[in-house]
Length: 401
Ligand SMILES: Cc1ncc(COP(=O)(O)O)c(C=O)c1O
Image (cartoon, rainbow, N blue to C red; front, side, top):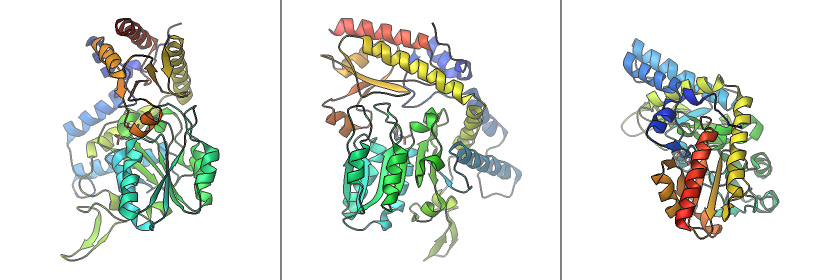
């Protein structure tokens, strides 16, 4: 039975790509955008762009109002509770860098930062470099064969020396949900700060920061069908209060002379300079669009499509699926076939998937691989997309074997 996405027509690029002979299966890298976002961006630019938080004039007041409305909507999307706990960044990567610099002062030599073996470089390198700067120890939690962070091992490795835990909610390579609530509880029992990388998880229905109980939660708008150039850092009030200012300039300052200055608290104190105004406004429109969808229908549809993808891959001779993927994406390798050669032939046939290390070199290396193919789904994909992928895959494997 065909699976037809009721939301496909909301994303004009999907049709446009199809007219160019392209089947888009790389939404975990970046997602296509709904009309709602495109219209809101055009409306903002066509009706008067203005800077935020600065001007008295009407365009400035309107832009500020829409910008701050998005802050509220982002907080609601994460069930953040009290307002003022959302900082806009330029993406997930810049949020992690903000944290790694903003929290540097809380660490003392010998303290431990705990991450996991499956982290994206964005949630590895800022902590690795902080550890090198401050002579800290980076502790890496192991991952089971199913692709899930090993909670029993974590219970041993998270100790009174742990100062911070930073782990992914949904693996961008393995498509596995991580036991973030348990890990956060373990870390908090030792008095550590907790950071969740929600870059993938936020897209697929689990985005309740109060339920997770973390201090910080990070995501990029562009993977959530929103514009690129903007990310969201949620921080609990007490956690945000621990951050040291790290980027300096307009609007983050309370008072300054030539020699000294005082700075605003979060959120504005961490949004130095002109923020990505149109992107924030676009994110607001995207969240309105997503809020208008039947979330359980989306989850059910995504689960069916994912199962079809996973089952189809597992049926094929020599295909090895990485881990035990739960949602959104499947990564795989094929015995005797280099992932780059396969990706090349898929690309030639107009199938847009991702190949390589997926910005998780340590994980891919620990699996004894140089890379893998990742097929990732958005709510606009349908079973015809999968059929086109499988037919291209079969054709490519015939050539390569
Ligand atoms: C799990 C995960 N974390 C962090 C990032 C970094 O996101 P960005 O490049 O938007 O900063 C990504 C992007 O692929 C990701 O998948």
